[in-house]
Length: 195
Image 1 (tube, rainbow, N blue to C red):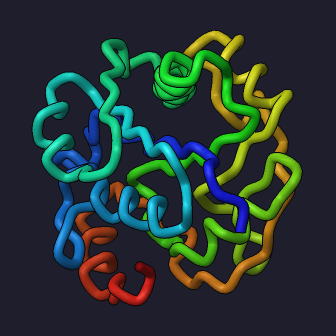
Image 2 (cartoon, rainbow, N blue to C red; image 1 turned 120 degrees about the vertical axis):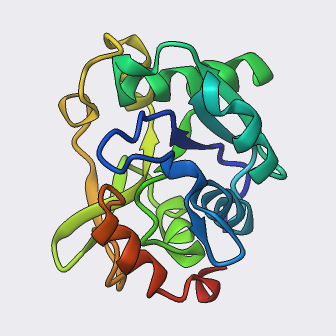
C-alpha cells in the first residue's frame, strides 16, 4: 500500500434538507465526520483535513482526532469551493500542491478502509462504483488537482473531472444522508466492520 496521500473530508454543507449538521450525525460510537477521519487514517491517508463551516468548527474539531480542521468561510459557494480550501490548506502545510488527494464527502458513508486502499492503488483520477453506479470517495490526480484549484468555486466537480470507475462490493455506496429516511437506514448498518 502506498502511504502519504492526503485526504479531504468535505463537511461544510448547510444540511438544509436534513435539518441538522450532517457531520455531527451519530453513527456507531462516533459521528459521520469522525467515522470518515478514522477510516481515512486507517487506510494510510496522511495528512487528513476536514473542511467545515465556521459555525461547526469547534464541534467538528472534537470529533476529528488526528485530522486538521479547516474553515471554509464561504461554504455557500459550493462543494468545489470547500475542496479548494482543503487543497490550499494542504499546500500551505507542505509548500506545494498535492499530486493526488482522496476526497470524501461527509454525507456519503457507504465505503470502508478497503475501498480507500483500492483507490490509493489507482494511477488516474478514479471513483468507487458498485454495480456500475458511482459513489464516493474518489482520488484526484494531477492535472485534475490543478484544474479543481483553478476553477470558479461554484463549479460542480462533475464539470471539472471525469473519473475512472473502480468497481467494489459496497451495497451502501450510494447512501447519501439527506433525509430522515436516510438516517433510519444509516442506523441499521453495522459500520464497525469498516474500520
